[in-house]
Image 1 (tube, rainbow over the protein chains, first blue to last red):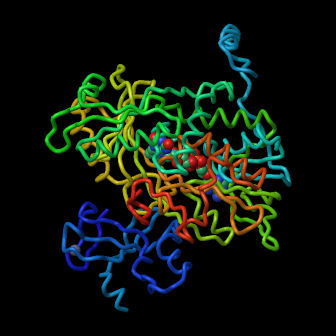
Image 2: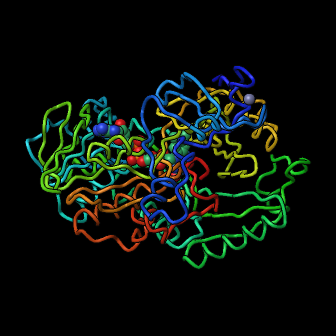
Image 3: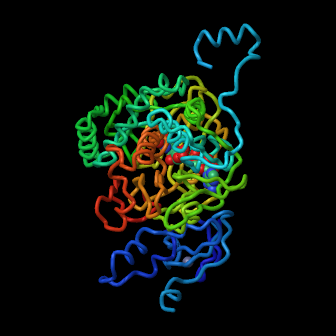
Length: 88
Length: 417
Ligand SMILES: Cc1cc2nc3c(=O)[nH]c(=O)nc-3n(C[C@H](O)[C@H](O)[C@H](O)COP(=O)(O)OP(=O)(O)OC[C@H]3O[C@@H](n4cnc5c(N)ncnc54)[C@H](O)[C@@H]3O)c2cc1C
Ligand SMILES: [Zn+2]
């Protein structure tokens, strides 16, 4: 599995740490209710097919990436910097 | 047909032509009292206990592939009751007791072998943690013995005790832990359920769950619609997909876990040995193969195969622990899809939909749970009250934060348990 880091180019899986679904980019406000926090911390779409995840390029540039990947085939179709996503 | 030594002799003398099928192959009826979705270990055990304990025999188990083709036939077969937290502690203790009587109960040789599980530790801090866990196990009524380095040297002479990274200080020994033959467990429960009237229906994928006025009424399948008053979802790695058919979003992420087996060797490893620091564990099957595994691949996956970096990592860890492993040749590797929960503990509960019950979140530890989970889930489905041993496996704990059971203290991230 190669992940196309926008800063470093296509790099081996071993350089990255997966965190899970990219929903974790959208942290609720402190005062948001139980439902919002349950959604954020626990509940997942967990799709069989295309998905968007957060990966950390820890043994490379250190950037957090949003990676588009297929959970059935392990095919990686793209990656962009999480900061662009979070800022958008 | 009852299985016995005499039966083997009798059948052998008549050319083994008269063995009966272990279970029937019925077509689905238009309706049942109870439908179990998923014919893995947990689904089959649930059906068995529904019939055997609760007298419910108008039950069907619907399996999309063949019985025992999922994780129940892919795991590394470790059976133990060495959990520390209330909730898990009593549940796994209950399950281990069921294991101990399972072969008589099912009249089926599941090859349950209580060869002992040894969890190694490598520092003073880890020794303290092991002692604490051992005490928790003893308080629960199970067994635990703290081994020092000398004991380990005697029992496990083949380990590299002086490796510089993680020198071995000792181990926590759980004599009643061990292994079982995974396929046989599925077959034994299948046969037992079938003998009590349960319909086991394979090649039958559930594609929809019918709900009217907040109450389940049946399922849509690749073999037609089937009505039911109660439905249990017991599909391990596919839990999110099936629950989505009822409009539910679960606290589950699916991940691939790999395992490995070498060519058959003479007996060399007498116990189950776990090496937490290296994410590695090993035992030897009765056929002689060294069966071992490591951690998840860590990224969500529905592909029942993993990637090479984890293969390499597991081999490296194995070599640091027992260099003799390098002489064996690897025969096969495979993967299974794990239903990872946010606190690493399972869910056995009702849902917001009446008549719909959920059993999932077993992470990579659900094989040892097969009898306990089936027993408790059957109790819940039959009586609408949780079994005492599984009363804390509530779905609502994630919503409220009350009663989370994070055995490893790694926090709410699915792939870290
Ligand atoms: C490599 C590996 C090693 C493991 N090692 C251990 C271990 O040492 N000790 C331990 O305790 N646990 C271990 N486990 C975990 C254990 O195997 C699982 O937790 C347990 O088997 C899951 O429950 P099950 O047997 O019911 O699952 P499964 O056997 O996966 O059963 C689920 C069934 O549901 C079916 N299904 C899915 N969707 C549908 C549908 N729509 N309609 C109909 N049927 C459907 C599937 O085909 C499948 O047969 C391991 C797992 C793996 C993969
Ligand atoms: Zn990078």
